[in-house]
Length: 203
Image (cartoon, rainbow, N blue to C red; front, side, top):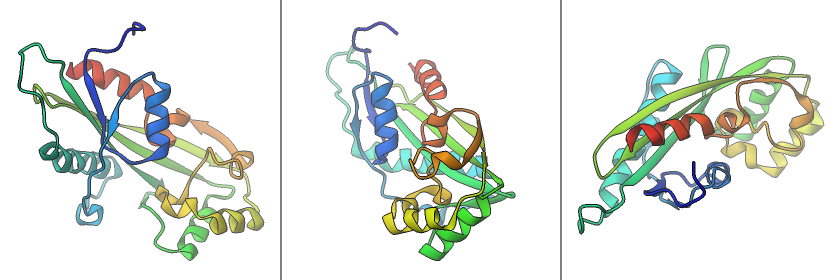
């Protein structure tokens, strides 16, 4: 991509700090809007279907709130990126922990084991209505995670807001990551290469 500004407006339909950082690191300027949807109302058997359905529901919630300039015909298109992520452990979908006890159990499960993140990215061209979405899966293998590390993480509290109670880029967690099969930005909630490709596809 050339150094000059891309010829479109970009809205990130997420209030996630990690996603904002990744999109910023990719060189984009964007505004953010968050979808106020009841995620629990959307249920799917397969994690891949669930994250795609949630990304679509978020897009549907945000689109009516966006005003698109109707003026000159060559106005730059507006693109909306919506995403979702779940953690899958032994075939079970994990969302944000409902309590400290659940967060603790989640982390104990990962110790010496592995989990996967399934992340969706949906890019909607609000000017043309064109929409492309895909999901990305990353496998994460862990060493043993000491109890005192789990205690510290819970005390600090960020893990309570993360899908599956999992933040691999956290300085306390990093030393216990054995291997990540896939991209770290995907685990953090926004796979760069996939996002880049979907943006190109809807333009």
